[in-house]
Image 1 (cartoon, rainbow, N blue to C red):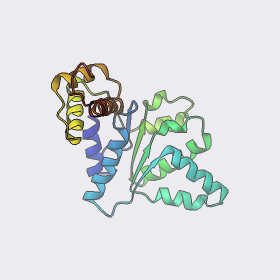
Image 2 (cartoon, rainbow, N blue to C red):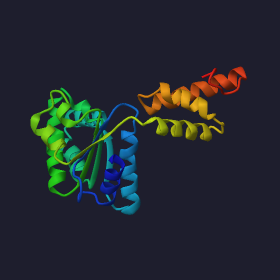
Image 3 (cartoon, rainbow, N blue to C red):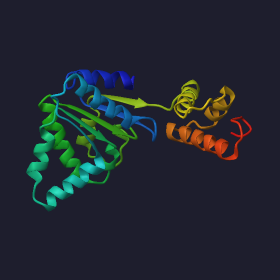
Image 4 (cartoon, rainbow, N blue to C red):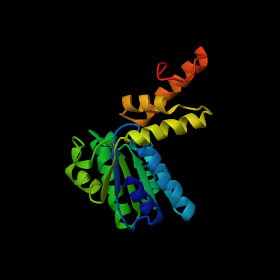
Length: 211
């Protein structure tokens, strides 16, 4: 569902789900999906003004703009965009000045018909200390979640990762790892990398015993 929504937004920015709010746990592919939106949109319409920014980087830019008295340039940069991709908006928690800037930029872009995409580790209504008016804006479009991959998907991810490393991963080994590592894809792939390294360094075959 999240992937279908992302594709729709990339193909018709500002026309369908605006804003698009994607949330999910660590290592499940939120940032990957947001980059895909920007890349796909630009492949279809190279003239689009697309900008990806983590919320932390946005915060640092704001601080520099305040220090150097260039806030007008800062605002102009963001308000001229056709597609804004802001990652990890849970970073806004407890930063009132930052929330205010995001709120005003959101309104300007939304009123101009520009597309906005946010990612977060939780849905808007569950972000603590977030201003009610901003939480309302964040959740005013389509809110989708990325859940952990199921067992079959985890096995497929492991086999694909092993193939990229030019290794043949036995199915019983993939099943063993996939049934034990369920939280996120980074941990899943990390477990395989450690297993492949152990197999190579000790000159032992890939097996359930070794796993």
